Amino acid sequence: MTESLASRITPDIIDRLRAITLEAGRAIMEVYETDFDVETKSDHSPVTEADDRAEAIITPALKTIWPEVPVIAEEAFSRGDVPEIGDGPFWLVDPLDGTKQFVSKNGEFTVNIGLIENRRPILGVIYAPAMNTLYVGSPLGAFMEGESGSRKPVEAKTPHESGLVAVASRSHRSAGVDMFLQQFTLREEITSGSSIKFCLVAKGRADVYPRFGRTMEWDTAAGHAIVSAAGGSVTNEDGSEFLYGKPGFENPNFIVWGRRA
Image (cartoon, rainbow, N blue to C red; front, side, top):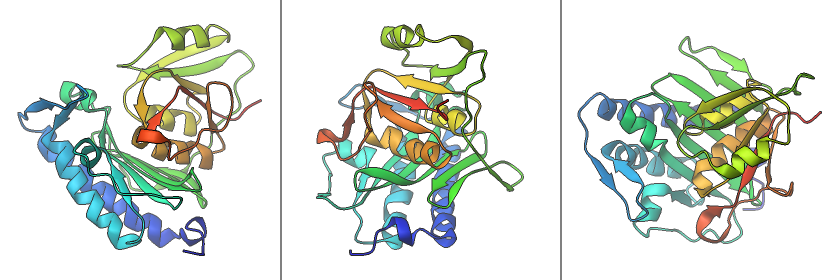
């Protein structure tokens, strides 16, 4: 491929990706409304029929957009199905982010699809099916879509002079996060599950989201793309650029920022 994928992202591509994500969300909700079984993977994380059904929809559908772009998807990865990415672009798919929230039925779970080029996320879609809310970030901008179906641009905000609004993980809060936040004046703290935390920063509801602990690239790629398109950023703990295609697709600690003052 000589032409960059970023230059080939059009409203039609976004609409196709949106349709794929909504279809996966419908499959997830069909399982959500039943008494589903919960299994445990080798890394001790939970998995359900909804994870597998959503991924079975997403992976082949992405191949119809750009057949030459490999797909790294969470459940396939856990089975050892890992296509070679080389130095080229690749998709990162978490078919059901926030499985713990899905199991507890609190609604805070999402479908995440991100596209990486030159080790950076250039396109991301997050859909929270229980909330019927979708977020998209790309070179064309960032927007959210609610129950009415209307699209609203989203934009990260500069922190208020009275202090930061921080969002932290509902299920994976750590002492490192508490220590990090102690250096700031906080006017509010929010907890949330799944990649919704990225969306809260992207739409200006929160100023910072620190995550210290193990995550995988498919957990962050879509949200990273949306935050970036909304004017925010994602960095390593030391402030350096947060990149993708790392060994094992495993992330270090990271911090999501809104607009910096």
